[in-house]
Image (cartoon, rainbow, N blue to C red; front, side):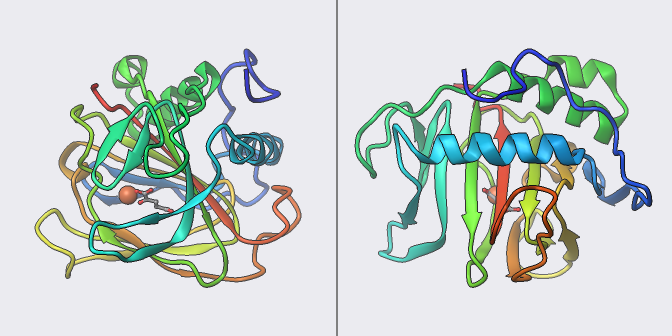
Length: 230
Ligand SMILES: O=C(O)CCC(=O)C(=O)O
Ligand SMILES: [Fe+2]
């Protein structure tokens, strides 16, 4: 099993000395700054390093039109390629992706409980896929919807390392209205319910803002947990 914290249960609340307030960005879209304590951030960074070692390497996803994403990604549980999920990374090396660990599902349930203050919704949350995205200072992610999942369960997003601007838009199109949210190391963002299919993207990464706490030397990691319903 990946993750030194396996079996130790879900993370506790923010341990920050000056916690930033929890912010409901749109109905069903909740930002919880500093949710992951520093020790958990380091554990997740370490786990991401291990996942990046294989069986499938980090890769720049190639889009059907020939464009290459600037973000590098590795998946757990199910491999995402535009625009479907499969057990094997057919657009990388054909290998079966690493399993989705139970400890990460427990973190997901704790995240949903925290964001929605709803223990029933949290208990029912059963994420089975994760996308681990690595951004260097030049990487961006265009506005898109996460819609390859059959389940309407929320997406749980955990950020590590450099701070970014996460643009959270509307469910109609890539344009306005949208809200720009700074996601820093340890931040949680959950989008579900009426915001589940909102367009979103990353417009900027602030190089060198990571600090030492997470153990990231440079760049930003984002881990999104999803319930595929497959
Ligand atoms: O990096 C982020 O914060 C967002 C990632 C994302 O939207 C995705 O992986 O679908
Ligand atoms: Fe997304």
